[in-house]
Length: 111
Image 1 (tube, rainbow, N blue to C red):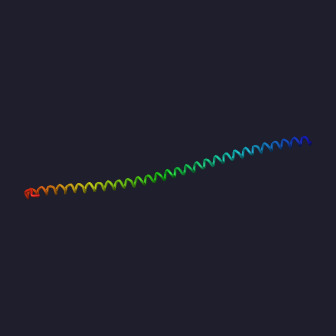
Image 2 (image 1 turned 30 degrees about the vertical axis):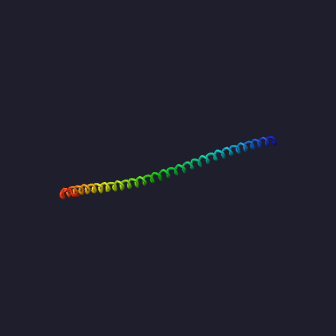
Image 3 (image 1 turned 120 degrees about the vertical axis):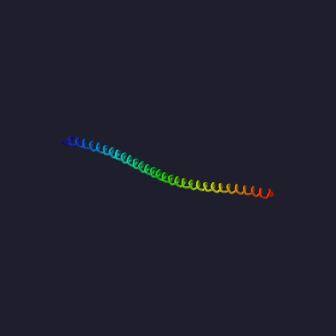
């Protein structure tokens, strides 16, 4: 029986070694899966940050565009006002010139 016990011990030890080897392989697979999960999570986080940055930049550019449009409208209004003032000045200048000519006619060109 001793030889049979010895053979059974060797087979048992061989099975234990196989199980240990498989356990190490399973551990490596689990580590690989964990690493993939971490990488995936990091990519999701980075994607989220990029999306937030893009959203932030879009909001900022929208606000800047609105501000620019408002300022351009104000500038257009001011330019319109300046043109109106210039037209009034031109009208007054013409009236003054006509008045000068009429005055010269009535006074006989003494000016």
